[in-house]
Image 1 (cartoon, rainbow, N blue to C red):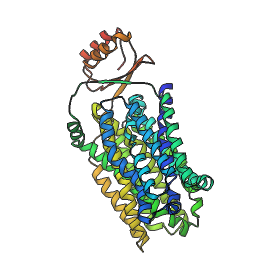
Image 2: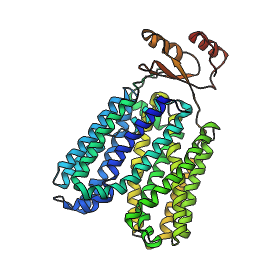
Image 3: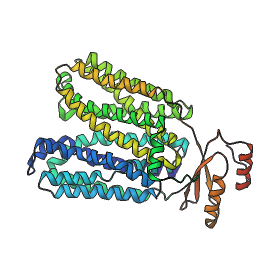
Length: 454
């Protein structure tokens, strides 16, 4: 079970993610129409205004994450959220489409998704991290569904400029959520290297690259589906566009009943690889069902359901696996590469989804997406089980002794990282049980003055 600090931190950091995503996604269902009111607006510039946020996110995730592995993560999150809020305000005050594009680009400059996830990894024990990441994944999915319902309604009340002001307010509200997250100081075995060397180290790791390809494929397929599916729900299921949120939201809730047990199985019984590959299989199943049954309302909804269930299992598993596989001293960097891959996947998914709409053969469109998912499965087949660390929760010694104490801990074989929470007067000590030997146990017992169950 999560402790109170983990529950509070998971709630706060998931809320930051959800508020940012809600502000981002509310624009999407209305801007293609509302954006026409801006001076100089053309279809291409309207599309750029929507998409430029994702482009700057993809470009800046890695620089932010490289900094987050060297400096305190919370100030970087604050900086990112201030940029997000500033961009919203610039867009809200703009009368031309170019002003909106600049505002959206600045908002996207707050590329701190990876930093937030790395901070969540810091403040949760290894055994509870998958649950925390699952909650974050669900919050993102929920904000997506809510945004598509709230966007048109809020625009009718406050107009498109008012909607941008709402995103600014959400960015500032997200900053306040950081007050619930403890101050942490990370200590790990010292691997001094330059920024470029650190990035190269992450990019050379085969399993990390498979995870980056996985998040790219996952969000490519999701974005393409959300472009390709609505017209079919209208045509074959007789569900009007205004009611599509009522289709997606129940599917999201149903997926929770599959996602959380899957996470528990993956973590408790160390079946992460099997469940990961099964989830990709579930996505393929959903897409194949749509190839042959898209003309039937209930088969169409069943295919969508299979896809959503598998998607949410993957959304929860990916960040947890990434945090296990990434080098401890480069965790945020690995998450930054992963986040860039996610945004690039969404970008290419939008492009592919638009091209699929031009096809006269609906089954062929679903077949193309199925083929992409099958290639993804083949690439992912080479994944090895991640390394499973465990966490000890230890009280801190006298404040003046903390640095010396952490150094002594890190000198013990099998201890990988010490995350100190000085305000709470305890630390999470992350251990690789496979490396702990009898000598290490004795050293740990001597340092702590008591036996510790490992």
